Length: 572
Image (cartoon, rainbow, N blue to C red; front, side, top):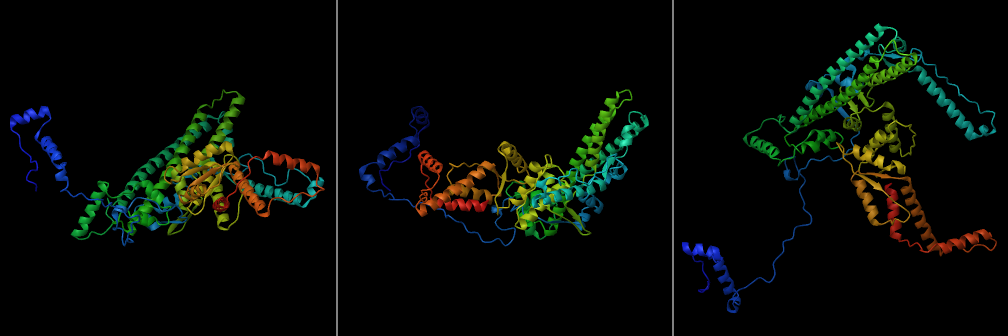
């Protein structure tokens, strides 16, 4: 220590008071004296400063050992779903019975969800004759055999296909039965204006049906709350499922529960449980969040989650049926015997249409579940789609999606035409996108330019809730360069299970750009085009001269861009 180094001196009370206003307190004074002392040349020569400091560098890669149990690396655990590629799910019937879910309820959920209200008391099935509808003829309504154009092989095959299709449709239409509300058959509807007893019976029948639906919906609401709370309680160990251990194990369990409450440990929520049934590693995804969740308890959580989803979908179905019944009651209140004949005819048609819609809503069935004595097998992606958007898939939609999936597994292309209102944009396309966008293939939806914004909005709406997927837009023109960045963006979209929306113009422009680049490379390799023969047409020479004069910028093609173009085509 230097003998003349400034030292800290405590001021008296009066000096402190004076120095407070002058800015010369003891600390400021000793710092100023230290600065003057250390900056002297004689003192600076005695000080040794490091020439360079060693910078701390963090490793680029951190290697973790493979966890041996769910208790390892708790700070690295995050709630996530590995994939959405699970195509088969088995709901254990015995496990459901253990948590007081009867088999009759499961069978109703798997076939006709509204069967518990005893649909046979409210709905009857009638054929075309009973509905006063004419029989569908199986004969072709036109004859083209006299035309010479109809005698070709292609025309004869087309005529035969039309004839076969008409016969199949006639057989199907003549043998099918239509659900009809009891009290709303054609004869009953015709008697509404002239027979007050028929009108009274119809209103009382609707009142009983509304009461039954309200009772079922109230039961489903209570069941939904109980099922969700029970599933979350077991999944978070709020309801213990593991055997009680010693003091150390109990202390660790209490530490884990405190970590959940203080948000230091990850926890589950119901939407995560719903999405987990789509994962091929569902049990690992959920049990990694709670190491105290046993395998049997996880199966119970799965059963409770699936039944809660089914109850939620049935609540939506009951809502739709009740809304239709409300409109039907309003129409019945307009029935008056004094109404003009044209008003009575129009009102009868409205009542017939509305009653037919209500009957269809009541008898709506689920077509993707197979009930066996021990389990209920189904594709969980169909159920999650129904639950997310509170709808029930039609039979034709389920069959069509399965046809597309079967064609994909067989390596075949498939084209299918659907009429307006069949659910192309809102059901079939999003459902196929959810199934096919698995991180291994790039799913692209090509729509007309006028429908691009609408289709993209539908996709973003569908994949913003339980199942989350990014939705991108592929825009391309003949002047857009094909670079490595474009290829990497599409690879990123594929890996993130994204959906690409594009227009036919963009896809065609990309293909034409590829053809143009390949043609240019071929011409540059062979030394340009061959000289035209002297006997060529004079018009072609004029056209070629005009082309050569009009092309100002020569296309420059980088072979690397052609390579990325071919790789992009492989992605599609």
